[in-house]
Image 1: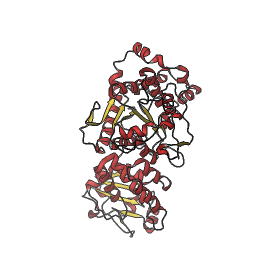
Image 2: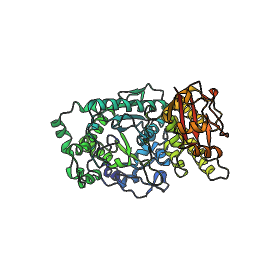
Image 3: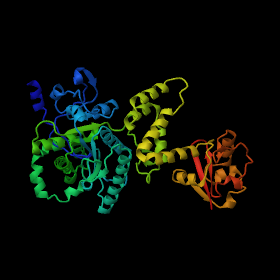
Image 4: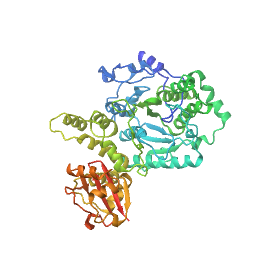
Length: 505
């Protein structure tokens, strides 16, 4: 009886739309540690947010579970922040779930901040579930106010279409490359054979009439609760305030979930921790409109991608870390992860890769042993994340470029290698008579590699001046025809990081 009562009291959950969402009445999310009685062994688990504390008492694992619990896997790797019901653990071992994450097309490509959503979707796939990526072709016309101090700029139809195509290509490429399913792959609807689909909420929103929406959905929304959302309160307290258009974004997201639940059987919504209120808002909307029995849909959030110092991970000096190779080369993508600090690398290996935890634990131990080769863990991280995002071809391109640009490397440079790194290395064009028979000291200055001849001479004496990755020790060195790679280019390096490609015109 107690378990039944607890289950009845727990019917306040369900789920939402997009990883950029909306808001309805919901219980507060407790961020405190709590005692779990899963498998009858009391343990402490961090940052699990439950819609109702009573749900713990009624949650058990099926001893005959047919697959690994994706929730347990995510928790072990640091990818679980909150779940709306702990029942999702056991259900995920006995039933095939359909999980989705939303992405608004506000740019031509997704960036590193979006990668966690794709990784969590991929974990659902790897555990035998189905994945849905929802493109916000409609909601991007409104703009999610969450985490924004100003209203997003309005995007015209052509830009939205271009952005939608761009991020659809990114998601399809990544999920298709990394799927182990024997199904037919990507589709427009979930079925028994497709292992993931990419959908666009504009496909149903374009048919929705305002009066029908207000009647069928709007009457279930409580204005007071909507205004209590943190992102709304912050904007209302600012000088800019919030437009009615942005305020309605929450309702659009709620309807997205309702549509997907009713028409596609989607029953899990995932999103970043800043979306917890939006996700629980969606589950509340389904509870009120459909009045289902028990736990039928769930919400799950993962932590935001932050560095150990609390700053956001995913930005470089040049801007966002894009997932599209046309906006950021696999080489630069690889280098970004290769430069991760030691303090962050193990955590990122758990969060951003699919390596076994045993291998990651061993890498962590190696880092603390005498004789550890610096950046071994970073190299593993860079390889795995680049492989996931860009595939084997992208990883090979990144590795080849990395080796080719390493001073002292024995890799033979050729024109094709230069073409692969041309966008990632500063370059200049000089006439052949400005290069041939010119001293390396003079060329280092005229190419822009160094500011002065004295600086070039000083670096040369210190062993830090390179021509085509070969260290130069003589101040009298002049450029000869055989120094010019394929008669077109040469590479100058000042130390390990500063390089210039000199094109011969």
